Length: 107
Ligand code: FES
Image 1 (cartoon, protein in one colour):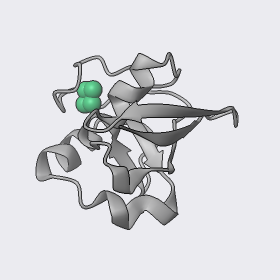
Image 2 (tube, protein in one colour; image 1 turned 90 degrees about the horizontal axis):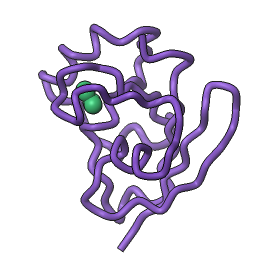
Image 3 (tube, protein in one colour; image 1 turned 90 degrees about the vertical axis):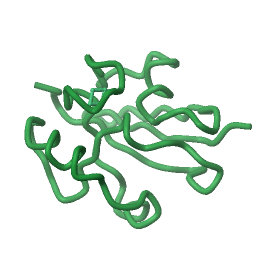
Image 4 (spheres, protein in one colour; image 1 turned 180 degrees about the horizontal axis):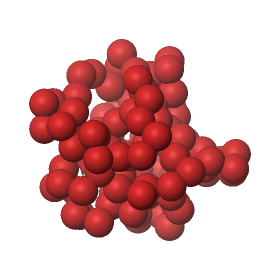
């Protein structure tokens, strides 16, 4: 089972990826060569280089960030209210159609 995740680059390039349920939004990007997500710590919530902006219409569905994630987001550049770390978002069937935008830079 997969869910579609739509990754939109800073320049507007859009990629629709079938991400296996249970993988994270970060893993879905890395597994399909989606640029703009560095994920230097490999998903341990310890680097903030998997920063994405979650489309407003999906923010409630994603659920709240953990205190760990909120703390790590302080190290990301260009943080906005809809910023999240994509390694902390697990894809479920309810997230089919999720839209995330990658920031201009992860540093
Ligand atoms: Fe490092 Fe997400 S991959 S915080």
